[in-house]
Length: 460
Image 1 (cartoon, rainbow, N blue to C red):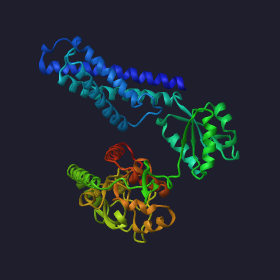
Image 2 (cartoon, rainbow, N blue to C red):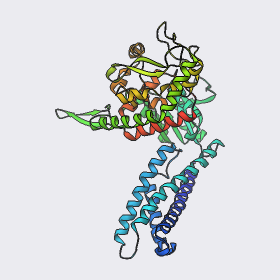
Image 3 (cartoon, one colour):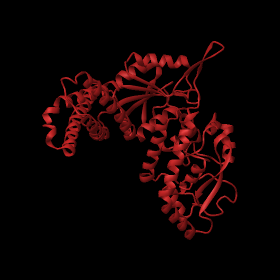
Image 4 (tube, rainbow, N blue to C red):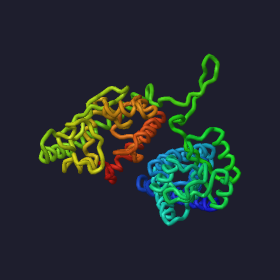
């Protein structure tokens, strides 16, 4: 597997080199179109093209683009390429500063090369990733992984791997605290933790995922030390209710050092920035989606008796209630006996309601909530007060979700936690988002939501 990783890394580096040279040629052709043949033949720019190619490969290498084991998402890939191409271009410009007496160049050529490189290298990575996914579907280029723990967490990890082939994992077996069951969800239990080194060697596993959040520190250290003897990669699934923050900050209490492991990322000027994005995007959405919303309202009125819009009290920032607006997708008397949890094939839906819920069109009026400031584009999805009161009694840190505005979409929703899913798991995703907020994360969630709106019909 290590030899394969080296070959895959070399293949990607060769792809980047070819795409970098192609980008420079495209930049040369663009300059010819704008300035004519007076700029000279392409051979005059080969040294500059080679310098840009070397800079690109060096930057990509130090950003560990050739050390990856899994295929990243398209959004993350484009962001990384944008950053790395920009750094490589700056490195080329810096190098040219020392060679200006021996190597002539035009600034426009560098700008064209940067823009062309962004396109060609993105295309190269896209084709490479498609090739990798094709190989993984055929059972090749897969990381053989062992899961330690057969409990709920271990099963969740297995399901995530099975439902996400792009991760590039092949689960070869479970390792349990005690060798009890013979298999879990069709995957064999290969033995107990005491036999872990022998199991790793016999199964040729290259990675071990430890799914024992209830294990003590001493037990985890013991398991990790056994894995380290076999020189495999080790990942630990944490108890996210104990460790939620991605960063640990160091402070003091009168000179006594303290570690802060939880904090809200969205503070200060970031609040103003997020609100600005909310106003701009919600205004544009209401402007461009107004024809769709008008037709939806007419269809609802023609389909069943009652108003087109449905207003329901939900809990938002600081657990304060607000009226959330949706298109009505159920009968007018759907909540005559109190609020009810929406389930798949809900009999209370109307004919039009079934369609608009499946396509998430019923959520479009919430852009009004975003514009007036009751909600944000991205954040934890709001719940009804009755459910909030119920969940706060049984789910640790549930009320921490209300430290930020409720969102039209969120980190939990794009990761499959929607509809009649586990509230406990949804809360974990929401808390992670709150403590790891960034503007780029919001944009990523919005793009993935838009893609799901176009291709996913999992809502009900």
